[in-house]
Image (tube, one colour):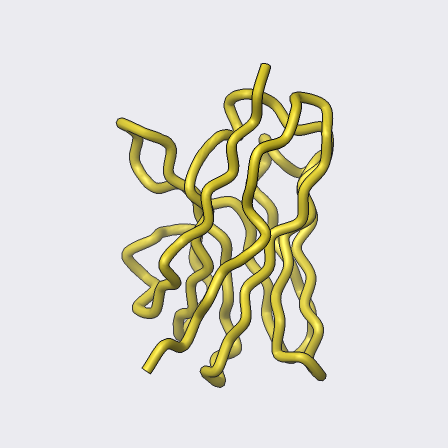
Length: 119
């Protein structure tokens, strides 16, 4: 049973914006976005605590990325603005049992959605 499904990835020019979405069919309070670029380790992007909407965004991305959720639709979003070439990666939605910036602490993952930023 698929529990996390990402969508909304695509090709965008540098400086542009994109919003990726995660549809979830799992009840978890700790949700996050990670990304993985070719040849690099998976890295933390953003976290949201579902009940209260507390968020955390990677320090280097705080001014450009925003995480949010729609509890009625059971959807999580990542709004990405002023995109750069180095933001090119597969973006993954993840669910865990506590707050963490470490990918190993999340046990449920979506299949990922590709975001490509052209320079």
